[in-house]
Amino acid sequence: MRTTVPGMATPRRLHLFDVDGTLIRGSAAALEISRQLGVTAEVGELERRFVAEGLSPADFAVRARELWAELTVEQVSAAFEQAPWLEGIREVWADIRARGDYCAVISLGPSFFVERLLEWGVHAAHASAWPAVPFTEPVVRSGILSPAAKVSTARRLCAELGIELEYCVAYGDSLSDTELFRVVGSAVAINGDHHVARMATHAYDGGDLRDAYRLVSG
Image 1 (cartoon, rainbow, N blue to C red):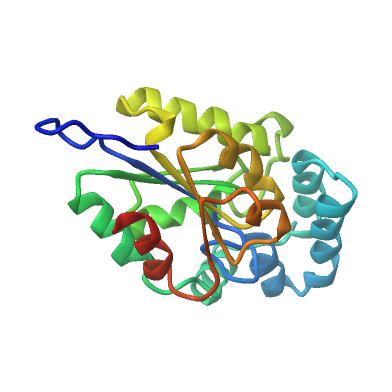
Image 2 (image 1 turned 30 degrees about the vertical axis):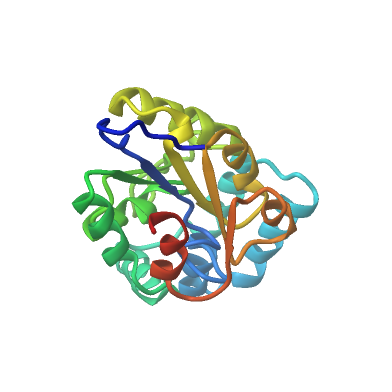
């Protein structure tokens, strides 16, 4: 729990946002990219196996790379622009900055998609390291993030910023967010499934990030 002493400055906070299923409502970067290539069903099956059968993030990435062999930069742009993003993302990040706090996205999704969010005002974007599009190289398994890597990334960001994990707020929706939810001071389930609903400090169902943010910003 955050506590303050009269006359002492309020500690800065770090807001950590998941992307798939959280900032993108009801979808994921992989699904939006696959929609551009007509392989939604195939990647949807990989998503199902990731959740239900324990398919590793690295195996998911290697198989998705095969399905996306002909992916172009233009298709990535279309996938990003057409994704069902929550409303108010830019406004929330602007408010976080105005308060002197920090915000970052940590996603298992591909870096060439997730890093585009830097243009929306987030301080940092951490994602699985994929080769540049169009692909000429394979996916390097060691560069693909896992749920545990979300925690290590959060710890590294905290160390760089001089912020304790207890002053972090995590926003997520599903199983891949549970490890991070366990270690932060506050957690917001956004359109969350049963994995995060029972762990969250707050829960929000809807399409506007500003409403979820108000649960922790006052």
